Length: 414
Ligand code: AMP
Image (cartoon, rainbow, N blue to C red; front, side, top):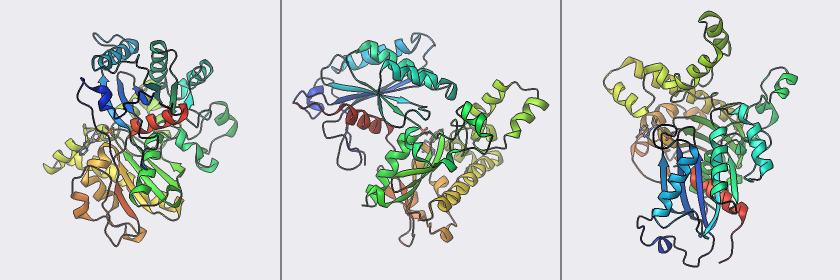
């Protein structure tokens, strides 16, 4: 599934791109988080289609961390450092071969449901969404601003984490609260990780040798953040994250679903200010809250040593996952595939096994031997007798962002 090759030779970057024509086929993808900037430079000369036939050649990638501490004072400094690293490899941002910068933007609200060319008006609209994503959108906005300053002539494309979920029907998007209040404050279920759910659902169809519009898939994106989605014929109809990424599955440090009255109880009985409850549920809950570790590898090690807290954390995590698989089976009616992706989904044999064992009644039979095989690419881990295909599909959000940005700006003939 991953056809990209890293060009390690800084001496021959043009040759490494596989595109000697000089056309503008490169896309810089920026993922600006609160304290880090991740970047990838990809050459999309093979075409914008990521899953079926197209290729994105990875020319360079990097991570600038600890923004705000030490030498990297702010996002502007981080981006300048990234630009410098690329220039050192002969891949500077002044290159005429750069077609666009693709930015991951976490929250697009109801306004942005497609990749969008950034203008002043678009930036102002993304700014208005900050109350919905106070931890994420400000950093994304800064990334866009600085990239625009570095190359004002270059198209900047915003790709939204919420966009793929814009198709979920109103009855799934609505919380059952007072409608006027909900509408006044934009309270509804938006969903996140959309770029990954979109990519993985299509890659799963490709693995099965079928068109995406023929396949119903439950995608389980299990990273440090985690979310499930139900995708019917390529269209997302349900997802587990909501107004914010806090709802749904148990995550590394987030609680996922809980009775909202827990919050009132903490405010009233424990005297916690709202901000502290926010931090508790987002940063000190989930696997970390349950057992003190948020890394599934460490939890696995502790379980092997007979650690009860680690075992319970694992069981709470897996139980929630099974509930969502069952619920989404009912939502879809017919399920063709369950696809695991992201750090835990791609690597944890134990989570996949525990989440799907004993579900023969739902047509899901995981094969323990296939599941235990380590492999790089997209692969099936279901038994031959399983009605539902179970797949492990490595996600590639950067490639998907690059493809969407490239598609939007259109290939420049070389
Ligand atoms: P992501 O957010 O997709 O980068 O996923 C990060 C998480 O993946 C980590 O916090 C780990 O819990 C988990 N992870 C990464 N590698 C493994 C592995 N080999 N086995 C189990 N979990 C893993």
